[in-house]
Length: 114
Length: 114
Picture (cartoon, each protein chain N blue to C red):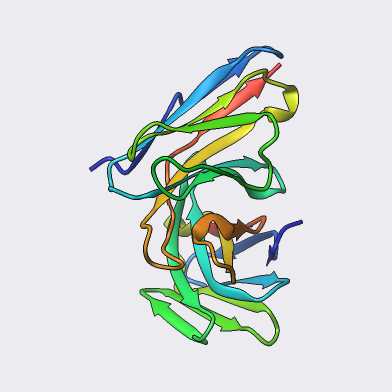
């Protein structure tokens, strides 16, 4: 039982390049999330998926797209990377039916855009 | 803006002492959660307290919630070197949605000195 798995762990991009961050969970959770973490800013929600087939914007969605490929996988795509997207990205999942259920996080992808 | 703000931003104590961290938030909540983050890792859920609860315990952790003051505290008793980490509060706002409204604070960096 791996929990939430994120790939890659590290990535360096040049401005304008694109990439997809992958996330998979094996806990049969319906809800999945993408957060970014920046120094002094805490975690900010980029996009979330309440269930397979649905996605919605969070607090900071500009410059990102997501795909809920199936119940297990939720990917985050940067179409044209910018230095402001340098951050640590975390994927998380949760049980769908209990209000306030805890989030289960992956170990993050550290992205640098030069 | 951040819903939750932790205080202090950083805290250093001797091993064996108790550590107290505080979280203040701005609007009415459904529940409040505390998470721990070790360096280079994802967040790990510690404890959840609902808006109708005033105190909750889990092992060496004690969480209080004062909805009239919009604040919560996390007490770690008999601290250990392994407790060195960043601690975040997260609030689940009252809404018709689920965890997509979970908003994180900026964290308290706790250092336990052996």
